[in-house]
Length: 109
Image 1: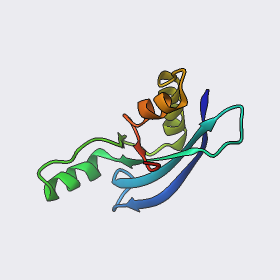
Image 2: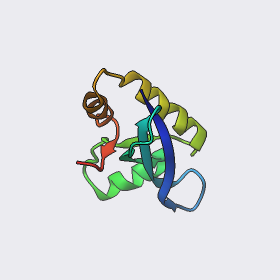
Image 3: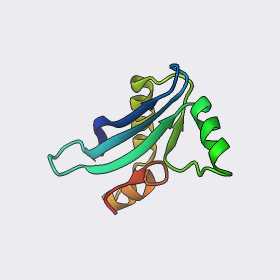
């Protein structure tokens, strides 16, 4: 079984107010019962306001690896990540990592 081992803010960019943010998170996910190395993933947490600014500069933005939320709350993000880990469960470690790669960018590839 996999679990969230660490969640690190790798970069954060705040606009003029708290409703304007773009935050890069690194997610370490590993086996619960062993100390084997974790698999590293990343996501961008972006506010709707910042997403609107991004879309003014680009015609399209692909949503892969994005969490969109009005208010940045690390606890809500942790809960969502753990839920996605739980629903990605499979008998094979490789299959679980593949399943998680549907939501997060896998940096181990």
